[in-house]
Image (cartoon, rainbow, N blue to C red):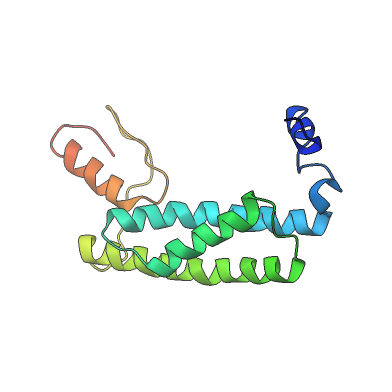
Length: 148
């Protein structure tokens, strides 16, 4: 069976063109803002889950918000705006879970002086925020002469 929507999808237009599927720029902007927020929240939730910290409400929100953005069934600006605000609230909960997990595994954070500069020899430059991976890397390189 061939339909107009199938033809649009085949030509790469689908629900990405203005007016297709009833989208206007404000609705698309809210959907994209929500999706960007979900990407960050899902990454931090994954880190928290590795530390044994989860929240069923966060998981349910992620599913609900993905459905609202990726299926193109919700074009109501008020409900999308409210979902974007809820994404911020849920992100705070995810950061709380991550903080709890880090504190339980690594202890309470304290200010520490770190070396800034270069050192001779092999080394690994670390950027990012995954403290579990950093702790594992420090443990694996301990006594090897590799500067982390």
